[in-house]
Amino acid sequence: MANQFQLFKRRRFSAMFFTQFLGAFNDNIFKQALILVLTYTAASQLGAEVSILNNLAAMLFILPYFLFSALAGQIADKFEKSKLTRLVKILEIVIMTVAAIGFVFEWYVLLFVALFLMGTHSTFFGPIKYAYLPQAMQEDELVGANGLFQMGTSLAILLGMIIAGVLTQLPQSLYWISATVLLVSSLGYLAARGIPHMPAMQPKLNINWNIFTTSLSTVRYLYSLPFLFFIILGNSWFWFYGATFLTQTPEFSKVILQGDESVVIFLLTLFSVGVSIGSLLCKRLTKNEVSLRLLPFGIAGLSIFAIDLYFSLSGLNIQPAGDTLLTIGDLFGVPGTWRVFVDLFFLGFSGGLYIVPLYASMQAYAPKSHRARIVGANNIFNAIFMVGSAIFAIVVLNSLQLTLPQLFLVTGILNIGYGTFLYLKLKKHQQQAVIQNHDEG
Image (tube, rainbow, N blue to C red; front, side):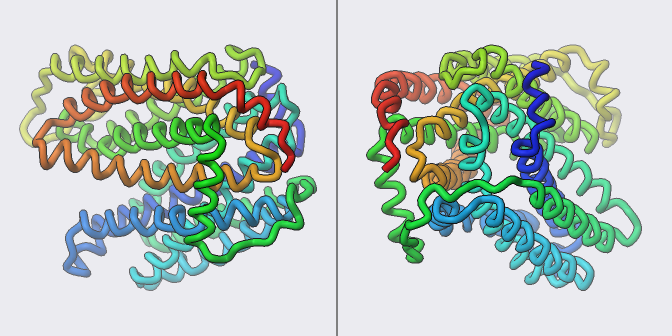
């Protein structure tokens, strides 16, 4: 494990790590702060339903992944990555300036514009950072680097949500939010200045600026590489699965556990720390090899602990005093809650074992000339699966009238079938992928 953290001593890793960490951190400060402002202030001012505003916000952030991921992949393959990263980070500062103006003057239309632009920023940065890793890392460093990246992303999301919650409670909160997102975006640019030069993988590429034909051709190219196609279906299932659970966390905390805001933060922390530890262990458990041997354990854990979560919740009997919600300290004293907490931690842990081998394999086996475009295709499918997760939850909870614990049970059972299908397909096509890995074309 010590060797894994030695990567932080190497500028080729640490500069990109902190650039992506600060980017994810800022994303989540801005998104969560906006959602809280919409929920507690803007909805009443605008005379709109909170759910409509929040769903509009979610749609605007994810829409650029559908529109621009394939184009972003082409650009990341054509141009040198350190300069491209710095350009994207300058764009982030500009976007956060727009957001700050929107917050200070309470111009919600401008905030929605900034949210769409921030989603666009993330869409263009994704192919750069994930195509950068296999170019900058040695083969025996790739799993460890991906584990650290996954850990960083999980912690950045968690910390961003917590900081947003703290900032919205302060006097003059809109000014504090504005100053914070501007500061973090500036720090991200400073981190990006340390990224070493990484040559373009296909500098003679002619970029197709038609986002629709580009997306279609990128997906077709991915489909011609069956191993990578199923790797990306596996990556996207992780986002489907995670979104299904994490989106329900506030309601789960309040309605099922009768908990206050501290319970929401604690549950998110449990899941995020679990993902981080599982991700970090991948390097040791695979002995630095890019391998899918941990995938069955990740699949099994995601099902076992989701199903056990259903049964552990069925055995709970929580009786709050009056209308007072319980704190996390109160819940620790309720019989059976420890089992719930253990299930949530190991759901995250299993997710780490599941996702790191898939991301490392995607990077290692993608043809070098098309690596960033493969990541772009991955982002398209991630967006589709995350939207699918929202539709799935609406159908299960509203149309079928099932409970939240039953949603977790159904998701865990679905994971058995999907995970088994995925693993069998990957084993079938892996040998062909080794040959394609050496394809420079």
